[in-house]
Every structure is written in structure tokens, then in C-alpha cells.
Length: 96
Image 1 (cartoon, helix red, strand yellow):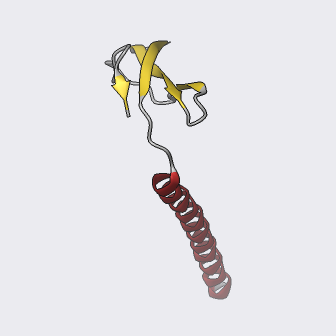
Image 2 (spheres, rainbow, N blue to C red):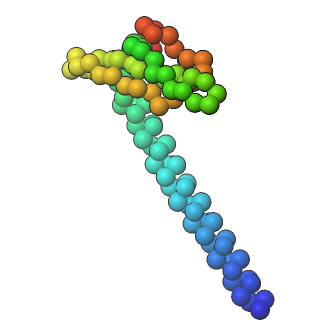
Image 3 (cartoon, rainbow, N blue to C red):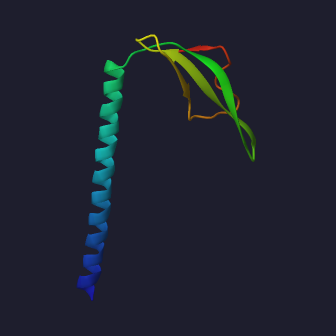
């Protein structure tokens, strides 16, 4: 009986070790993507065009919609997935 109990602990520790290695691998990949974006990305200034209001049990949450122009002079809109209360930006505000 003690041998099987020992074996179960080894399997459990091996599982957590592999899980930790997997999470570390994906974290490192995300870190590399972020570093690449910071080095090669293009900085621009966007304008907060409007605020999207989402209601929940505690009240209204606000997420900004930005408009920016790329190198090809093409306009883009981007809605942030980050919501806050109170709003983090004002409509018409310039944001880097």
C-alpha cells in the first residue's frame, strides 16, 4: 500500500510540474510578442470618439472607442476591452 500512495504523489507532482512548464512557455511567448511590439510597433495618437456604456448590477461601466490613422492614412476604430468606472478618458481626448 505505501508504494501506490508514493506513486500517486509522484504523478501529482509531475502533473503540476508539467502544468508549470506549460504556463511558463506561454508566458515567455507572450513576453516576446510584447517586446516585439514595443520595438517594431508604430506609435500614433488616437482620439476618444465615444464611450460604450455597459450596465451591470453595480451600475454603468465605460469602455472607450479610439480612432487612429495608420501609416497608409487609413482610419481605424478600436474599442477597448477594458471597462472602468468612472471613465478613464473623456470623449475628444488625445491618447498615445
